Image 1: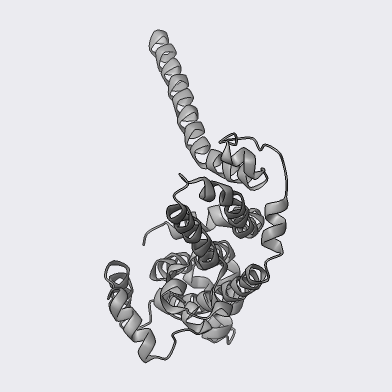
Image 2: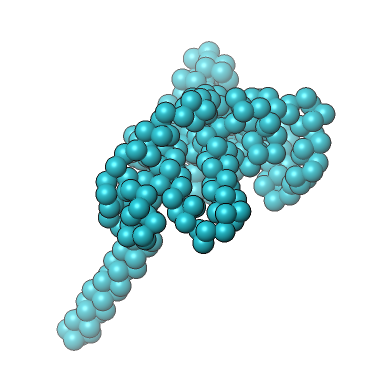
Length: 294
């Protein structure tokens, strides 16, 4: 019996070591590319051309960041992206809260059918061409609204919040009803304070999704003053690739522009990195609550 326990203890330790090694490798896969982009963004063009930059920067300079910050169109896109991200997140949360609260109440008639309709939208879509025709018929093309309204509510996020609200004891709602509270007061004063971690998680989902998205702007936006930051980054990468192909210099032009491109990537990534630590404690608990099935 003692030998069995010793062997089992050794097996657990070996398993722990293997798990730590596996997690460490996964962490490196995520961290190393990030540090590579940081190093390139603060390195000199000659060092990048010579392929000297990998994990540590060479010939440290912040000229690329000065170029990015000195570009009026880039700063305008940055401010516009912040605006649409805030509006998109607020509208998305408002619509998600209303839908989730209604569908989490047992007394709502037809909620099973409506829930099924929400789930169907997660698996089936009309496609790019019908969506473009729809945006055109609604006169949303080349407007700020086309970047906010079409994706303002996510069925996945609604299901997460609905599940979290269903976990709130019904006795709290009954007590509030006896005190004369209507549905709106119950939602605001009883329900929302109890699902703050989930709301913070969904706010992060909406904000990051809108901040990183560029495909809808690529299809629907033509005006330069309505182009978000990620579309500017996409155009910068595409221009660098086209310039290298046309000049036939073996990629040296693209490598020279890699510094500015990396600086732009960091410029677009830093805001999310700054916001995430403040929401991290809510993110874990909120995601776990929403993961519990009925």
